[in-house]
Every structure is written in C-alpha cells, then in structure tokens.
Length: 218
Image 1: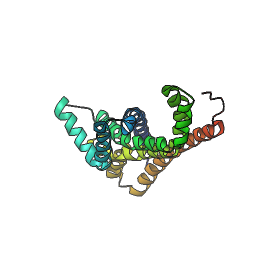
Image 2: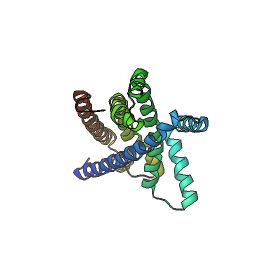
Image 3: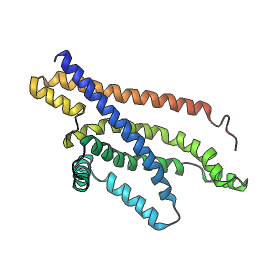
Image 4: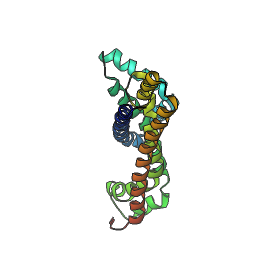
C-alpha cells in the first residue's frame, strides 16, 4: 500500500466522521423533539412514538438506507447519496437517542418531581434546572455508545454509493489486491475515530460528575 493510498483512506475516514457527526447532531435534535411524545397525555402521540421506535429500530440499517434513498429519489428526483446518507443515519440515531433520553427521564426518582412541585416551582424551571442536568448525567454513557455506533454505521452507506472509508478500502483492494494491510489500516482509522469520541465523552462525563448540582439554583 502506497502513501497515496493511505492519504485516500484518511480522506475517506474524514468523510465518514463528518457524516457521523452531522447525523449525531440532527439525530439528537430529532430525538429531543420525539422524547416528550413518550410522556404525552394523549394516547395517539404515545402510539406514534412507539411506532416510530419499533419500526426504525426493527429495520436493519442496510435496508433502511435503501428504502430512504430510493424513496427520496422518487419524490425529489436525483439526490446526493451523502444527503440521503445523513438522512438515513439521522432517522436511525434519533430512535436510539430518544430511547436513551426516555430512560434518563424514567431514572429520575418520582419523589424529586413531587418535591419540586410541592415547592411551587414552575414546570419550565423544574425541567431546565432539575430534570435536564439529571437526564444529561444519566443518559450520557449510553448516548456515547450511540455516537460510537454512528461512526461504525456509516460504513453501511456504501450500499447507496456514499464514498466513505469502507468503500474506499474496497476500491483500493480491488486495485492492489492488498487485502490485509488495507483492511488493517481502515480498522485503525475506525478505532481512532471511535476512541476520540469516547475520550471526549469521558471528559464531559467527568466534568458533569464533578459539578453535580454545584452552582445550580432552583
């Protein structure tokens, strides 16, 4: 494997990382909108939440990528595979992250809600100053796991012609027949990206744990 091949793999790894980060950002935003539906007083909204989670999580990412790509192409004509890839990962990650957030909310002790309510605190203040910090601390470890999964799930997007690390590796292997070294380098790039996300998350987790409720006023 030549230095030029290594540079090609590095560029493809950067594309994989950028697509994963964009999908994480949009997926987190969508999950933030979906999570309240799980606790909505109306049964129809709760049913919609459960249906979305069940369908998306129960569909393989590979099949979901094909469905979304061809569905978008049928409605809007020619569409960029990168746009379709971000949309696919966004919908997929949103389902996972929404469940992570829901678990964080359920982990909050009921007496804490009752205590805040009995003090006469506004609901918005309870959500912003009490619930949100606790959910962030409870949900951060599984949320980091989803972020790492996003990097690895980006490899599936090669099925819709997204030029990322896995597809670039296959192209180099077809040209050079250097299977083991190319795959080893690609695996190293995936490891570096996932390790970096994990380290950043661990630092954030340590800061949240050290902060606790210090400086928080109801």
